[in-house]
Amino acid sequence: MTRSFAGLRTGLPLAMAAALLGGSLTGCASLKEVTSSSKPLLPGGSASSTSPSPSAAPTAQTVKAPVRASGPLDTGTVTHSLKQGTFSVALTYWTSDNAKLYTAESQKTINVAAHVEDTDSTHRVRLTTFQVTQDDGTARAEVATDSGKFDVTPPYPYNTVVTLPAATAGAKALTLTIRMDLLVETAPKSNSYYRSTALDTLTLPLLTNGDHQ
Image (spheres, rainbow, N blue to C red):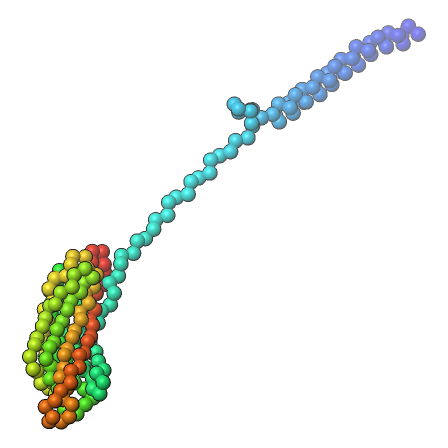
């Protein structure tokens, strides 16, 4: 009986030591788990931070230069037909200039040929006035006038050359108005005439600063 009590006294300290050791190990493991899962707080209170979004780069825009409009003399020549009752007047314009390079300041020389069509030669036709007026949208001026009694009975033509003066600076186009006053015989060899006026327009586009062909 005495031996059993002694053995019991010896076993109690060992069991208590084992229990204390186990509890210490469990506490360490819990402390390590809490420590490893903790995150430091930033000043201001929140643990998460939002990174700034990148700003969009500015998009470059291509600016197109204005393009000069095409003109009737870009190919060098053009013909217009004007119906005048029982006959027609054909007007042909041509130039040796490069019309694509015309500017308000450049010199412009236009050749004009007129003849009567769609009628016979038994009725005499006379041209009494040939006139050209230039309009650049700002200024309007009479640039050519030819008066007389010019026989244009078929097959005879009327030919002339018109030199245009400088236009207003910055003008984008020239509009030419062509006027022809005609006397047409009422009957063959009657020497009696009626008047017929033929009107035509010719528009010449001009290069301005920044334009290209």
